[in-house]
Amino acid sequence: MTVTRAFGDAGADLAFDFAHADRPALVTALLDACAAVPGGWWPRPVGARTAALLALLRATEGREALALTLRCPACGAPFEIELAHDALAALAPAAAQMQLAREGAEALTLRLPTGDDLRAWRSLAPAWPGEVQRAMLAHLAVAGTPTAEDAAAAADALAQVDPLVSFGVACTCPACGAAAEPEIDLEAVALQRLAVRQRNLLHEVHALASRYGWTEGEILAVPPARRARYLELIEGYA
Ligand SMILES: [Zn+2]
Image (cartoon, rainbow, N blue to C red):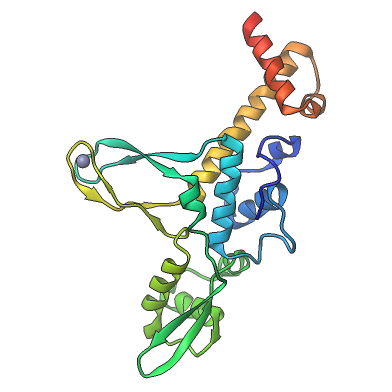
């Protein structure tokens, strides 16, 4: 997987709707635009999609680590942590399937959930979580027949093979010393920061249009580096 361009380098990036409720569709569209792969991003495992989104954020921000502000669950003090992008990238799933050993029954082979699965599950009624879980498990089974008792073990095993999906980080509060392992929604964090990049791009267009009277299309046709130079000039002489 290679990120082909940073987000915000193309005028089309202004069209992404970050307020859109359909998150799997938004993630797929972003990755297909900036990190295209054969066959597109829908059929890729969820953790691979998250890893690619983080790689896109890394290329866009030009930083080697993801800085996050967490809040201590014990004393409420805010504190900062940094997650190295290299370490996060190493957590991308290495295989597309996993095996679950079962006592007294054949082993269960499960596929890792993909973007396509997320899309299919969006239409499942959330009113019967037990039913939904069984349907999801049956859907992921490649070999062996899953039973209701397998659900918890399968969820644990999937989380281990694909750790970016339900990501937790062990940390200690610098104020009170309490240990915590908060779950961090890495996909949401990445989307939120890409949305900030989009807002900044909109500001760039606004500043250049206001000063030079160029159209949006004309401004976006100017390469990003030169756009930045014009903005420096505007700030310098404002
Ligand atoms: Zn604390």
